[in-house]
Length: 258
Image (cartoon, rainbow, N blue to C red; front, side, top):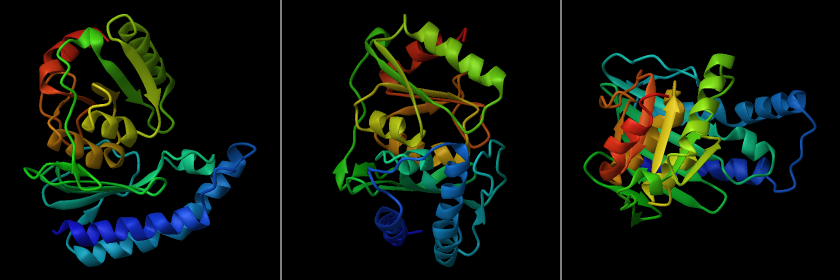
């Protein structure tokens, strides 16, 4: 699979959304208005984007559930979030993108992320490095977890027990790291890590379409990606921890009791 046709598709649909749906003046009154606006986004982009990618690789199957957390069997799968960060787009914020990953044997083998606001293109393939607008990315050189900026992200409508666990982990890590942040969507803290602007990312119960592309970009920028036991990350893993190699053992220890 070649990157360039996938890049063309991501940029095409990103421009459509930028021109027709996004404005920094966007303001919504409540969740009913958000759901209606999200339905309009789906009608504009979901099926046409899927058709365009399927034409490139007709044999690849699709991760249909945007909150998919199960493992995948063999073969190729498209893991795509056609409006990653839709809540931001709908509120006039710039942190939204088209996120496309091709997964083979439970691991991503191609990643294209396009952020229309700012015209930022991120790409990666295994063994070929990670790039932002053609410039190679590299992770942070930090070696002490106490100096680390650590981030996590919400995933959809988590059950209350998971929300509580996330909150407790944030509270505990505030005394173990330099700074702890939470944001949505998942893609952007992973891209910041790939660029060396943050130092660690973790997530409980990660949704595959939200992490597949950005995790490949982070690892191709030099990061290590495992679950919270230290086992290599793959689709279906129940947690995700991504850090520069020099911080990884310390990050695992810092989160061992959380």
